[in-house]
Amino acid sequence: MKKIVDTLNMAGFSLNEIKIYLMLLNFGRSKIGEIVRELGLHKSSCYNSINSLIRKGIVSLVKIGEVSHFYAENPETIIDYIEEKKKNINEILPELKKSYSRVKDESVVKHFKGEKGIKSVLFDILREGENNDVFGSEGQLSDKMPIFVKQYIRMQNEKNIKTRNLIGEGRKRKYSKGTLYKYIDKEFESNVVTNIYGDKIAILIWSDNPEAIIIENKVAADSYRSYFEFMWKHAKNP
Image 1 (tube, rainbow, N blue to C red):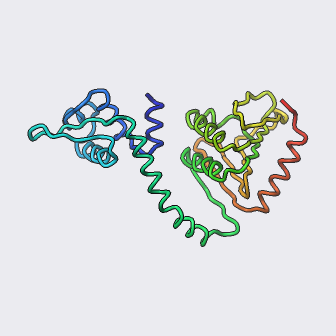
Image 2 (cartoon, rainbow, N blue to C red):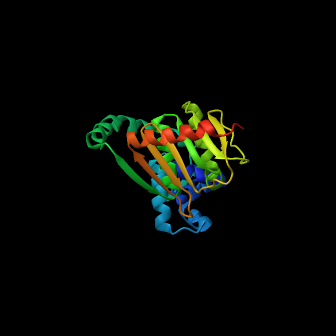
Image 3 (tube, helix red, strand yellow):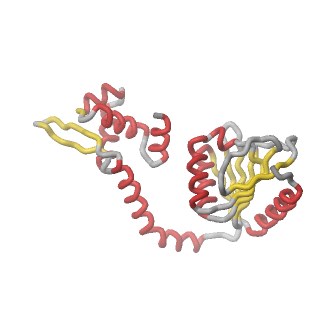
């Protein structure tokens, strides 16, 4: 159940919307009072979430007499909703890219916070589509965000992105057909993971509330990559 909730939340549904949809899937057609009692929601917030689900095409309303009843649509309509969003975004993407190109600086530093920030950085790596060189990884992503890491690896493989990962000797490797591993001395441990891809450096800081920084600068990225190449050359093969 947690995986379902996390996945729907990642797709843009609020927790109240998820609770209501799952209840309607399991209980069938229900009145607003039944939903409020079952889920313990405030009536006004319940109505707001239901109306949002109706606009998304995920829930429908039918009136029996003067009483409104709500029921869940086939779960495949969730895919239709997401595809429609994707289509709409693709239509405006060219204009957004024009604006982005006009204001893009030679050097850009971006700061992100929390798990959502970490996801934003990793999605940026996927969008760039460039091979990724990584050092400092101790399996933090797998430990902290186990559901997301599976999605990330799948998308990495779909985009044919190759990753070279320097890890501490003896640490268990996470299987991915697009990832190569080499070992460095175990004594070098860190909660800071560095990714070098394209003209960018992404630094993930795995504190209690994780943070991330993207530095977009070709000179800096090339310097970090040279440092990585030196470490890769002298690291141990698995």
